[in-house]
Length: 304
Image 1 (cartoon, rainbow, N blue to C red):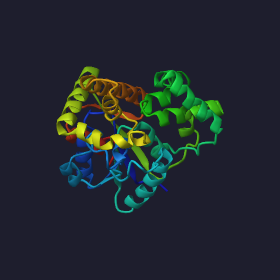
Image 2: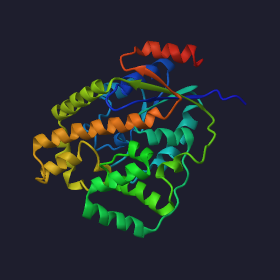
Image 3: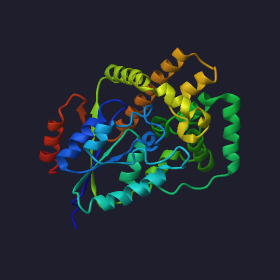
Image 4: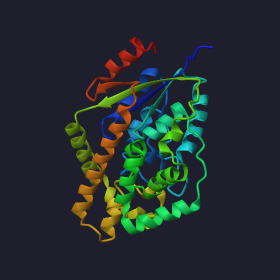
């Protein structure tokens, strides 16, 4: 039986314009959007995660946007399960669904499937926690860069729990954490078309710097202050919040916190690029390409 349903994945580095393109394409196909930005899942984190505006959310129905609380434990495996269930429901009425977001691990989990992660000794996690306290987060980041470049390119390296999770899988199994995403090779009942947005690095970095400044104007500092008492939660170990928590702790100046947010976001964008460049199925377009041109490509070249 031929596959007649299509998932269009709009990917690319942070601040490149994925949200606007996703909405334009969703309108054209009269469909809905699944967000694959793991930071936007949490309702308490709005400004620092660049959640789509109220008008953008009203333009097209979005799923997995501020649908969880920072107090909820939610993994990439949970997202795979929930997104596949939602796709099954949406494809009853829609031939095309959009998935938009910069969390490559989450996109790939839905498209390719993810193996159940094996259990590893609790002693490994405790050892890693001790090393984190003794050597600092940079030492663990460097180890991950060596033993699992794929995970290094995709996970939030400022998130201590996710960093430890990736390393404990490697130390416990001898296999990179990222390989558990690729072994299963599940056959989905839909086809996937990847659309990627790209720009010169300088343009991406300038867009990131501008976005951070707009976030601060929109009230990111107050949002971070409101969340400060919960700063040790896993969801808050992320760029845009942890830097301001360090300022509130007195570790760095306010100006330094802003520069750290910009720097860490630029580093994240660079790792996103590394992750996506390995996917030869992505059809790349300059970030200034009109949505109408990309739509024409999807209809003429992909028959949608």
